[in-house]
Length: 253
Image 1 (cartoon, rainbow, N blue to C red):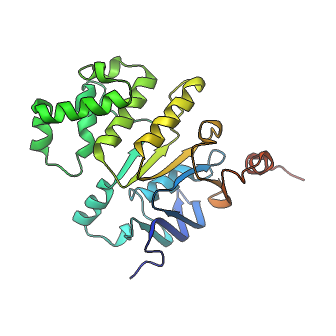
Image 2 (image 1 turned 90 degrees about the horizontal axis):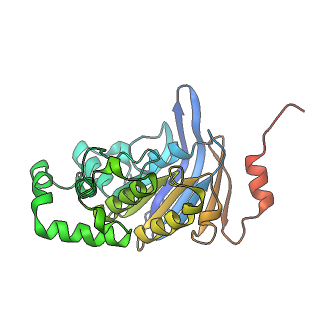
């Protein structure tokens, strides 16, 4: 079946996803074009993480249509699905780093989807790979920590390792799930700039509770509530009134 939105990196049309008997995503329509930077915002339980999992093809829709990089993930055979997932770089809320491994080894895992196990095993020993990773770590301010164990780094430094891992992966689509949760509020703006740098020339979708760090860096804000899009606005159109309505606690009348 040909996609209705062939030029979009992400296309959700009437997409639904039920988890534990609850509609986490409900009749959702959303399109994200190549090179766009989009922030998905909303209260806890709005469906932000589920949306990102659908976008990363780690979860399939229960109904409607979802297209990732022009493909229907649910209809792909195993090999093509792995190849599609390798084109999506995700910075998870829990980071998913290997604590006992070095910074270098964690960054190299960014290409686990495209390189064989043997190639990854010898990569830390290859001078060319080490030099290229060192250059990426220099971009995120960690060049001097390349051989340090990750569990000896601060939360902010670990966040930088996760960003460097995505840079090493060289994906077409970058997803970030609550990327500011493990850093101090004053460092959130710094992490936001790192994310935008990592997604330079690529498409970026960020789910977050924190609006301020991304206020001047993304193109659009998508407000999600109860699995539905409440608004889809440019950063210039987003107002405090819109945000207040998104986060308003509904109670009995």
